[in-house]
Length: 472
Image (cartoon, rainbow, N blue to C red; front, side, top):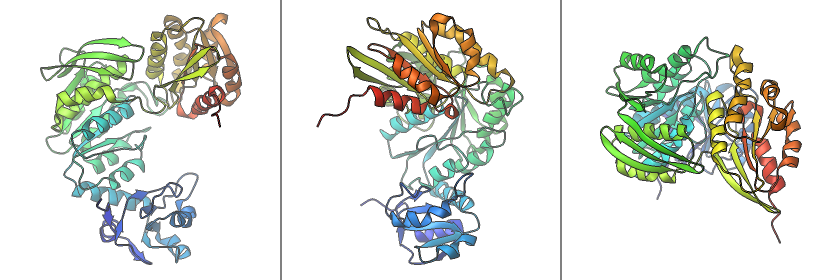
């Protein structure tokens, strides 16, 4: 029988709540979503920028919630709806529950941040470590001020490994999150010119990412990309917190060193040295950046005591995370269309990587390489330049048609020769019909943009339009 995640007594003690109603003995899990909550879980009524979770507490109980963590000021109006744990602030209560989960855990904990690649590294670690013991890791990109404590609060006491993704948009945001997680290993995948609307320089971004080292447990390990201008800056920050530094990359000083990589349209073959141990392995997710980040996975796995040879073998089974390179073949009249979903997010480096991946795929017969791109956001004063500079990447990688949307992508559009122009629109919704009308058999279509550019709906629309209806 599966052990309950929490007893109600444990949750009440951890949060300092005042309980009322018919209190269940145990709680099966923790949720902030009344729509997806499972029977017996604790519903946490967080107040967000748009919605107040208290307004959905009764719906949570109707869907089976065992209890609800609510604010004291809203508890009276919810009396009788179900078991209530009243606190001053439900978000602070969730943080307290997360800290209690961390305090009771003997898991070896890894935290991951970086300008790009952190979700892929987290997902890969979650899969490969789960083959060697009970592993708890973040769902989707739960990496912010509520996602991190929620993930912590969901960590079972039995976990052998824990993997947490930590993100930020501003300086100071990582510090309180890493203090909750208290990792044994902290990874910075890369420092890139993203979020420049909120930072004065890339060095300032590096300093914000380096906050993750402040939460390291004594004797902790800092895993840092060896092949970037900010490497020594990160090493210095890690040293300030007493961390043992492990570098990954192509540099001769990297302990997790890339020796060679054969890049293919559907993956890569990698040869590496991990602390002097030679390993060879294959990856399902294409791209040089994926191969580089796999070194961080191996270094972290070694640091928490996992079997590196098994991890290397299991990397071949790691699929691309949703919206980050997942590929599907859609049958159409006369052949098939290859759809590459890169729609989750974008920055100049990841956009170029997606274009390079598109260029590695050889189109059959009359097929074309088609790039569908939306604005890369939060790039500051150089935003238009970053977009315009993508024109050379489109040319170098043999992209046949470009469909672009958003005010910043106008800069790319203006740099493209007429022969490469598919269509331009103000937003993704307006662009979608032109994209769908242009796609034909054997085409390879890659869709990418920042989350705020709403490129995900473009992927869904292409899939819905091209996928034949199921037969009765």
